[in-house]
Length: 408
Image 1: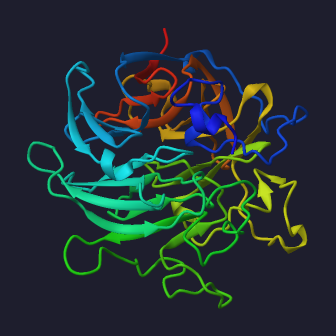
Image 2: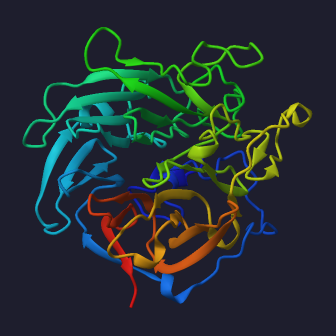
């Protein structure tokens, strides 16, 4: 375990990597010859400025827009706060599960948030104090927007190590809950979880929450492995939608197209961003390649390179750890944002260590151009979109909530 993974949220360091597993102790990080897949383009009318609107957060991990125009911000220790971006000095506590989270060693903590389509349930993803397992829990939200009762456990996934927990949550247009889980941690995927569709680790999960009855969730009939097997008859997890991921820290759905964007944190050389189109199956049953590949490149410590399948899905973009980069933070697709009129349809992303905003602009053929958006925000852990379309980000380096708008 790299020491950066232990102390980044108590003492700000270059990588702030405690949440991401951006480099593991057993990985060679001297990769100075690597270069980006695509050099970033700087387009003047796409430049962005970042305005800090609150600075009293404590290790924020998620920012999520609520239907009433407020923002929900998760703090790593287990608090969820509601902040009005028009009056950010006023905030309230929505949920406090600090006693459930407890242990913050490695990359543990409160890692994911989502709300039900009616905004009456709050879904949270966190690592459990007792054993480090990943827990998905749902809490009813009262009329005052505060979580009520003790919540209901939906899913518990044992974690063999304290890193690569993933944990991002999102609800799609059909009300299905998606969860991204890392490969279980350590370095190099020692248990081969990424290439094992029978485990929930290293996968994108897709379930239908049920608020009544004995079962906390259902398996959608159109999940690719809903019968518990792959097309070739081997065992598979019915909850899994896709696999072959190392640590899908952040993913998002395009509100206009339904496309899915997954930013997968790399090992020691390459970071990757995956894009699967809704009108092309949304990556159903896809194998994204880890641990045979890191980005589009063969993984240097692949235990069995000859066994790599031929149908692995390529990322739409990858970049190297040159120039001080270390860990990708996936963002959101800008849609009808009043403050970002020139970036409509652009997918925002950042690197945790580089601290500079980027955007991927897709063309009609599915190719992307990487835009250097100019703004510098160190240690971004999450992007979020408010109900009015405005885009925000949170960072751990300065414990701030940022509003992103067009510069000039």
